[in-house]
Image 1: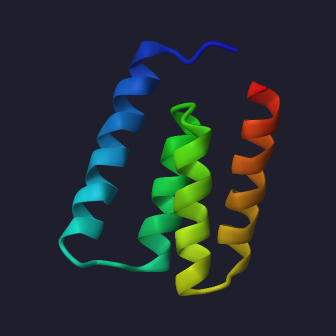
Image 2: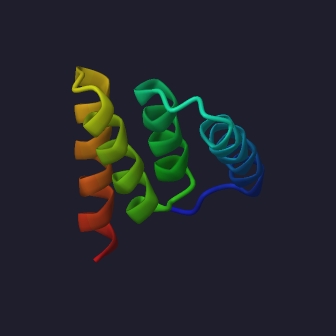
Length: 79
């Protein structure tokens, strides 16, 4: 399935937003989890998994665990 160009732009803006928030010290599990979701939607499964793992290392919660599973599934389907 191809990602539409407009979605790629929107996902890149979302990625940039959360990377900026994290770089300013907003090291919240929610920011990392949302970054994971944006990476996954952009098709970057590796960074999606890393961001989800970082979110879980800060706080273990259901949405982050789900995003980690989605990222792992994304990686499996790209093989």
